[in-house]
Amino acid sequence: MKSVGVVTPQRASFDVPIALSGGATLPAFDLVYETYGELNAEGSNAVLVCHALSGSHHVAGVYADQPNNVGWWDNLVGPGKPLDTNRFFVVGVNNLGGCYGSTGPMSTNPATGKPYGADFPVVTVEDWVAVQARLADRLGIACWAAVLGGSVGGMQALEWTLQYPDRVRHALVIASTPKLTAQNIAFNEVARQAILGDPDFHGGHYYERDTVPVRGLRLARMVGHITYLSDSQMAEKFGRELKNGRLSYGYDTDFQIESYLRYQGDKFTAYFDANTYLITTKALDYFDPARDYGGDLQSALARAKASFFVASFSTDWRFSPERSREIVYALMHNGRDVSYAEIDCSAGHDSFLLDDAHYHSVVGAYFDRIET
Image 1 (cartoon, rainbow, N blue to C red):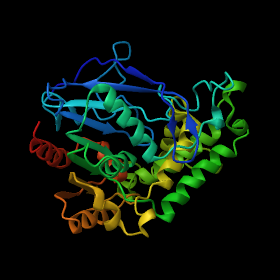
Image 2: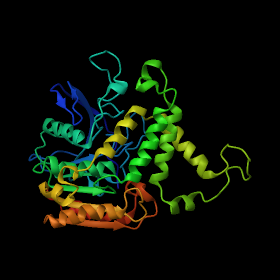
Image 3: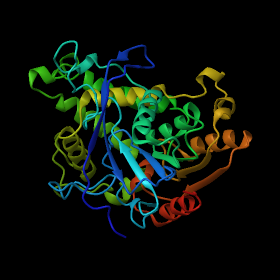
Image 4: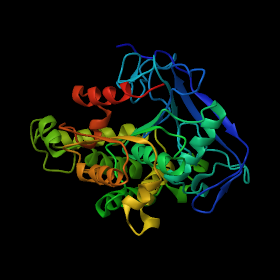
């Protein structure tokens, strides 16, 4: 199967203010996005791909000047792939508050002429969907054939069916949850405290000091990465293997898993922004469609009109299959058309990013049934 090849990011600027869930108003904002495939004359074959915490608009393909920078879901999106760009017009967007070009903490605050930093308002999943709708308007897409995403991307797909029930025909909610557990909120808080407590954080205004809270961001990523993997996968890949074949009897990296986590943390600090990490984890924490319905998910999802594909992974302990089944049961009790797949995969939460044959076959089979 081929890749979509060389792609080019695009930018859409919006000068109509948007009121955010937390009460703040952005006077204007930009969204960076990419598209793959062709929009048909009826505008009926458009699919929105929503990214997870560290994802971006770069869903598939490569850049001409960065041939090794492959889109984060390139194994799923492209000609002849489960999300076939020969049939569908696919759109990937960098979320508001992101660090890949859309307006966020690194952007210039028009009120001060300096980067927003900590002054950038907290945004929510609902806010992300609201600005995505504005981009859909700009692109001439009245209704998405499908909206899909994994993890917090799945939250966005679900929110689309609630906030704009007449603008999405199918929603694919993968490795996701209707709300975070207390344990998940706790992991996010530990990660945030690592960043907030870094002396180089400077109250979120570290850009002006030409520094980065590397230590805090690295630790936050290490904590997060542990939750993305399964115990069986870590045992299979690393076990108790020693990095140098012997114990150091000190606090350097003795075990391979320690070395791996430090590597992942260091790599993350080179491309991701600490303020964006704070904003995104708060958006995760706040998402709870049932909050205004007394905790009744069935009542909360009664607004949805779309057909659904929900998928979970057997070793995903961060967003376990039980959480996906909560969504399925609530939708079924509302008479919605729901397909559910619980996939046996050893890779934990990150399974949704991998090229697993069973997983891709069921996703592809679902897209095959979507009329364009």
